[in-house]
Image (tube, rainbow over all chains, first blue to last red; front, side):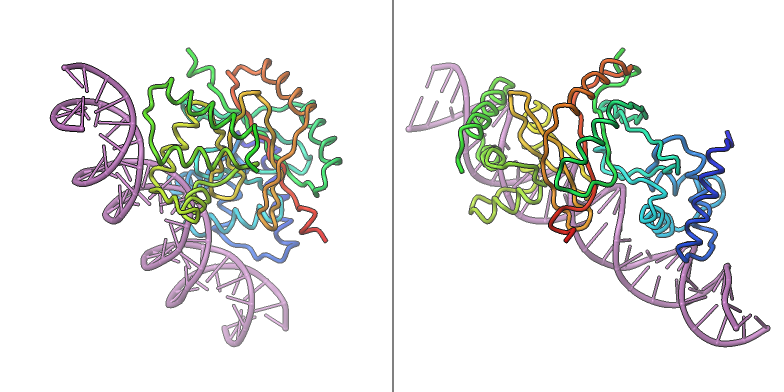
Length: 148
Length: 148
DNA sequence: GGGCTCTTTGAGACCGCGTATCATTTCCAC
DNA sequence: GTGGAAATGATACGCGGTCTCAAAGAGCCC
């Protein structure tokens, strides 16, 4: 599913990196291309693994480096959902984003969106003595597949 | 500050453990006593360390074991806030709980409460095809101490 | 209390995600 | 093309967390 949104993000990311003074490089490019095609968050090792099976293996260090740089520029979001491995996903320029349901039984991570939740967080952000940037919401429980 | 709430939680936890068929043991007791006195979440290694400085050092394995057992009985909440170390805090029987502001500059973790946020999550929980249990909300940003 | 069994404990080996190092390769401004 | 800086990747390392197993302690029957 090579959709337009993915291509947009990939292009956007390349641009922002160039602006930030980064040179081009094959490893980072491969990570960006893979991330752009994902619907939801992947762990660094999943990325490493998928690239390898695609025949575009890169060093582990390069994966982590690319993710760190992308996170620094807010092009990817880093999140931890209680599984001892950080996950990364593209941040779209539209500001649109989702949160995650985590099945504590099988570990599956599913995205969801909720406007009321976002609104509550926005309102809340203005009243704390804290310069709020990003936020993560994680709902733990049992997914419908495990419940049966 | 040996307050009543802390003592309540400690007692409650002991009771629930007994009900669940656990025997008494010094290490778990030490972990519970320490946790009961905390206002906010600690990492396992912080717990280990503090017990050691109190002269009540316990094996690392015992700390993790106790925390796991307590989490299983929902007596403590386990949360990860993007610092590569899980944190644990008491869950009070009242159902009252808070969420966390994380300073990405200094790493400080600060609790906050918000009723509107809780309400939004409750409403949302009923509409997803997922059996929602706990939830975590983490706001990232810069704390007032680092901002100046 | 004395024994018996089963749980709890803790020292240390081990595992795996993530980071640091550093020699090599690649990019790009000139 | 050439020089110098950035990017890459193999690998060693660090550290949070788990597993193992023998010793100590809890609970129970007598």
